[in-house]
Length: 357
Image (tube, rainbow, N blue to C red; front, side):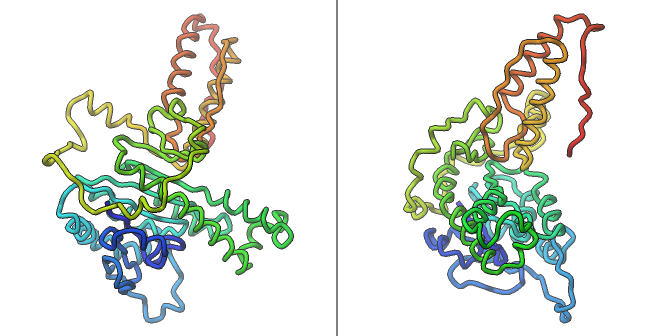
């Protein structure tokens, strides 16, 4: 396993003390600012150079930024540098990222280059008081997560609202989130709270990754990884009360993996059945819960409009699901079956125009 961080992450960077729990050969630091920042861990230095008049340079984020373009220009070198550390054998790559879009640059630069390896992502949305430039760049970076085997996505709004409730006298919700951004004390407390949550979740991530055989997302209702395809059917809320793995689990993570030869998997298989499976493979989405609720509302409206007896339980999942799962498909099949019993001229199809996204 390789744990990848940057030198610019707000939470996950080379200075985070929790990284010391790993073997030094496991952690890999991508130096986006073009300068060496560590002697402790393996690292890769991007060719990015600050402009001489950098004090007048507007900071940019996203795929068009100079910092990302510099890394992308040496993307192959970055990929091979990390690959060589493991001797060329298939490995799990865990990208630890946060609300800073720059922390996602290594993942984005490597995802189209990955072949034999398995990618995992731990992410957190930007604070809602951040600039639209940052939030827009972040959405762009996480819009396509097809190359990931597992995703944990932390909604920063939960942390922000929690900290506000802790400090209601000094920063009540009525003050508006934009005002909070100017309080250095509040922002420091916010970052500490976010760091604590990220660190507390890491043992669950590490203990699960090497067992993952199919695409999964982390569900905060059950505090466990859920298969993307089965979704709601696999949620066990009792797991939330289980004790998390000991932090010592991090110390046992090593860089090698025993393999039985090389497996060549066609990314775009010619076999029709496998092609269909590949195309229909559920993919993690940061707006998965919204999509799930939206489609559920449409199913309920369809049933009511046609007098079909229908009961739909709201999914308790909290996480970047695919927006649909086996339970959703089961409800849809039932409605199609019942709708066929009604003459076509008497069927009522509610307005299903997509008004979101």
